[in-house]
Length: 291
Image (cartoon, rainbow, N blue to C red; front, side, top):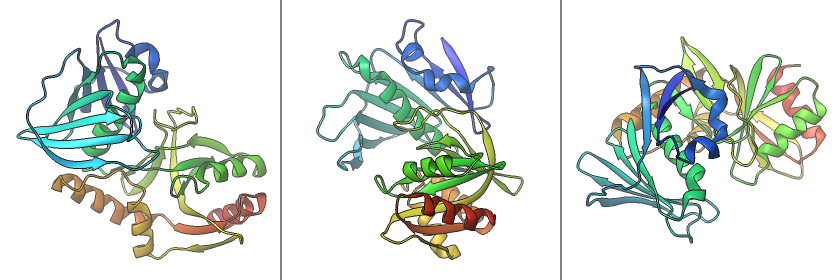
């Protein structure tokens, strides 16, 4: 079986046996189902056994509390071994094309419960890297909609992005959560838009919606609530640290930098030092919306 999905106006494809747990364990993709298309930016196929060629280790993500991704390169593509945490055994292996436009993945025997983890991590990587040259950014952020625009909150894990979105919803009428972990930004005809995605971290918020991007705010914990607008250089650095990137592919890296440069010239970006309280939400809201 092969299904198509449209995420941020890009079409992706997933292929697996009819009996595969992919189709029952991954409902987060359902809101994004689309008609078949010849214009697919990336595709992923699940197979029972993957032939893995010899490859050279390029990068091994070993950050505590995050999935482990061990990335190796071979002539013609990439091997990505995946584990939910750095101290756990690998549960799946992805073999991707050179530009990450297609991939084949095996979920190891006995690890079928990790099917959704494998699908999400493989597809997030394929999507981010195959669309980087198409004015598209996959970012780590919590996004709230208000008055027809989207407001993206950035920050390191644990700094309060989700909390700040919740505070907007609790204290500012008309707010709606768009995505709580991995929204997509696109620049189309000179306008930056932010989109929901099937990837929303621990919060089940999978909305096939989009809105013009009103502002981006980096959250930093502080005993005092204060906010200021970032310079273009500061904004670029702030955004870059929250983007899914892979510097080893030159075209991908160049595409990312070009999109970031255009984005920071069009969308205001701020730093909010704050407590997790209603005052911080009101201060941020009034500053970034002008209301």
